[in-house]
Length: 499
Image (cartoon, rainbow, N blue to C red; front, side, top):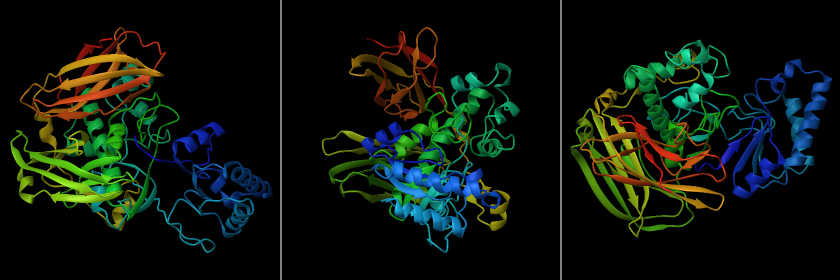
């Protein structure tokens, strides 16, 4: 997904984990855990103090030599009392900790160590994509360093749901779903996510429709969060997705599910975080190139096209430009009149000096963004998300005509794995929206997991072709393979993989 940091909260992992992080250059933010004895200071007995101090001493000595360790947090949701924090600091200093340390993962300062330089404001539930850029000073928007946040529910694909929900409990959503939401508490459910879906995309007519809309929301929401933080560097210095994946089957927060199944949210993150990236801004309607590489990009070509629901072209620009090292460059602003259309499809393509495509992006944009209620009253009433005064309207997407795609697939054996090359083409006159591609066993129809797709949940304009690469571990007993093609308005079919 092109992510470069992992936060650990009390569960420190093995030496193998840290050795791999060292080799891969993945930064680790570590610290003690919330919600248990570590933050129950009023209840501590003498033995608790001794265990806490010995635990910190052992972990500091264990971790201090790892290049991947970037930060230590003495608390999570709360900072320790002054006497505990003072002892923690003494242990950290005397045991040669070489990296920064802070009192907690929140923005609350302490008398001993002062400001933390981070925030832990959420949200943890669904917010429309524009939230991350239009929130410039209130809560979780793209400013500062957010140590945990998320656009909410992450509904697995149907194949995963069938592994942990009884056959008679797949639909409609019920209390069995609730056992797999949040921390397994029936009160931690997807009601707000579902209400937002009803308002933005229209109420689902069944499980398959619900899953299509859920994946689009996860893709759009995760992409928007990471793109906002990338565009606002260095006013925004980091964002940690709550969370990477779950310890048991869940419908909340993960970027890939318990079965290692990637879905909409995974690919939204992967798109947003690609090292060279072209993206749209919800706040000022600008198009931006983000270069995260430590080298300049001369002679780049950006193609920006906007279309109405019938695919009539509303706006088109082609620009040749240079992009500086490790930079953000606004290249143009899409005129307001383009958004007189009820829905706008925005296609962005970035090519290098040799004409090779290095980034593509596709948006489905409303004529008006959602409007938020920033009042403290609403913040207290909804601590996990910001209330919405009026939702954006994307219900026209339900009227997209069905599209049958052309596909070709070939496989070849590589060192350590198999590489499958996929070519998919839209031969129709209509948009092929949120195309979902799966590599499956021809006999069982089950998807090959774990799997690494170059891209997925893609959209194709009429006549457009995309070529993608997918890898899976060599030696797995996958049998004969087929490519399964589905999506929002895509006629379901499968294509044999040619060896």
